[in-house]
Image 1: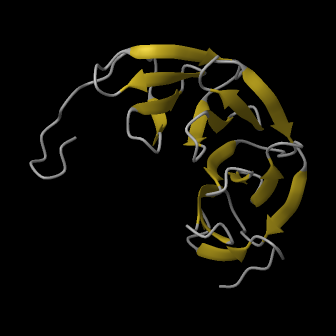
Image 2: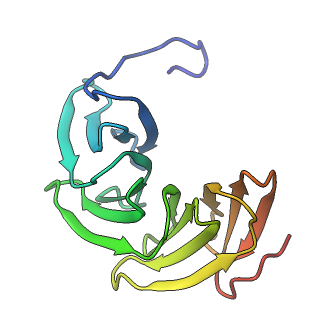
Length: 178
């Protein structure tokens, strides 16, 4: 979309089911989309071409977040896992397993070393992407967590839930600040 005019610049087609999430690389040249067809696709935004299809999720992909260097992406989906992808090779580098229900949202920290995921299990989890370790479980929501976004300084996150609340978290301590 051209934000000034409101014009659609290009339509990217290729997924066989609904598109649930999209994340643009920091240089603005590529986008990664997640879909109900269990795949992610890497798109060239200038040409509209699908450069690569990433396969490995066993169910719907609900969220994707590209790392700040634009080389990797983290996705979450209906099989309760997150996957870390190399966007150049298309290889799934690791699978992060700890949620007990659907992963609806993921946000990578600005340094690219951690990700925060939100799940229908009512928790958020803070992950070390290199070691695959769940560093912290953030508890407080009383219903599905549907959205999470990390602040630009990487120290905090905001989550949204079916419980009709937003919660503001300190990622170092795990404390709910508001």
